[in-house]
Image (cartoon, rainbow, N blue to C red; front, top):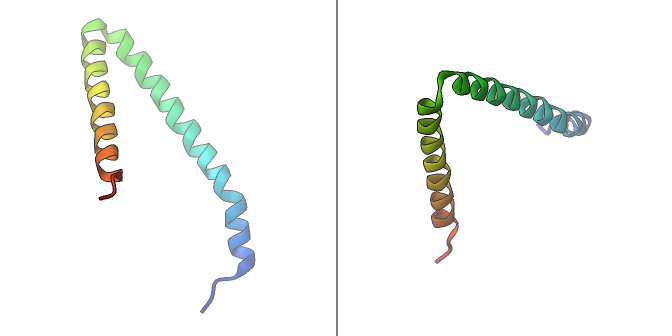
Length: 70
C-alpha cells in the first residue's frame, strides 16, 4: 500500500513549522536555565561551563572520528 501523495506534500509543508516550534521551545528553556544558573552564583556557572565545554569538545571529536572514511 503506497502512501497518499497529498499527505506527503502536507507533511513536507508542515515539517519546517515543527522545526521552528521545537527550536523556539529549546531556546526558551536554555534562556531560563541560564538565568537560574547565573542567579545561583559564579561557582556553579564555572562548573556548568566546564562541563558544557567538555561535552562540546567530546561530541566534536567523536563526530570527526566517525566521519573519517578509510
